[in-house]
Image 1: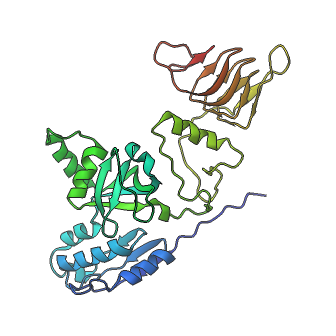
Image 2: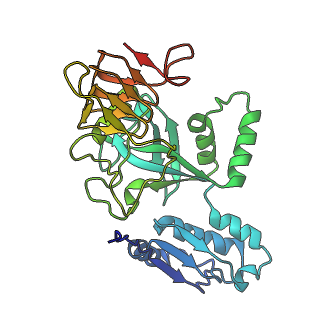
Length: 339
């Protein structure tokens, strides 16, 4: 029988005719907060300002910023055009020039991360790139609020700030060291708390999974998690599949068996398409596409990247091997051969 597919439901809340005035500050925060808990997306169906005035739009923007934790899609109504400034209304409501994904991290890692100091609502008060020291959070002194390195810009904000930065002779021309702090100073940077992200099919154990793989140790540890019996990073959640570019390659192959050639086998490992385990033994490792492990070779607790070749009789233990520099031998250009 064909496999039953799981359908994911998207909860949409729709409201209209809010007619926000200059005196509506605080009137909608409780409503927006409740919608954030009960829905996945909010649709504002027009006439959210009373007379289409920018000051009215600013009040609504503050209400949304203070309470909303889900995406908002809005369509202007006739009242929103009444003041003759619909473009300014749009710009005010889109608000954030950049939204930075943030997550709690150990304070000891502050010198490896961008550190966010949250301000009012979702606004970022300050942003420091890899500071030597950073204060802990008020409710958790041993933690910081860290940038995940994921940014969503409006086109205008990105073009404008990059153009200004290019003309600044004193700038480091770095996104975390220059671009984001400049948008914070301009009041255009907001933070998205990744722990509030709702992924269908996730569990308490794998919810809000994220790792900074900027160091070799953290990169290696994240891969070793994948080959554990019960990995924290769940690749098997069919309600939220991970789509990636899959090369057209044959399935992984395990060949040769016997004392003369060795037995091609892999245990507690992930072996990708196009790889050949030819008389070698792989244990507790991640094997990328196109890897060749030759007879009597041993690979244990390793991360092997594309097209690496482990030569006959070689033993590779606790290593991460990537593409070699030009000139080293391999089955394909850039491949690495270990003997």
